Amino acid sequence: YSPSIVTAIAENQTNKHKILNYGNGNYNIAFNNNSERLISVYDLKGDLILTKNSNDNNYKFSLSNNPKGIYILSINNNGYRLSEKIVR
Image (cartoon, rainbow, N blue to C red):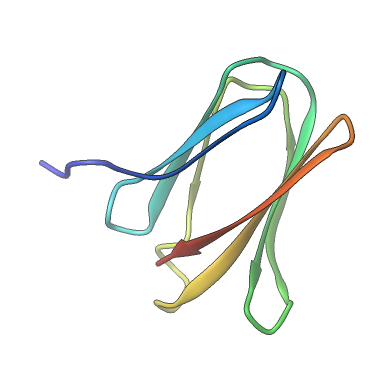
């Protein structure tokens, strides 16, 4: 059993999401809509770790093969850009 922890909740008029951290390097981003968005993760040096275009309401990704540390999650959606710190 691995409990999930909500690490961030962000919203504006049309874009809402929450980031679930399962504590083992696995994450899930739950969105309130299925519009096209670009999801990217960077390390603190600015190196791109992963990038994906997605229109799913739930996007799962893993950093379990990456070193523990702080990463930056970037979500771009119809002119709405959000950057969140996530901890591995």
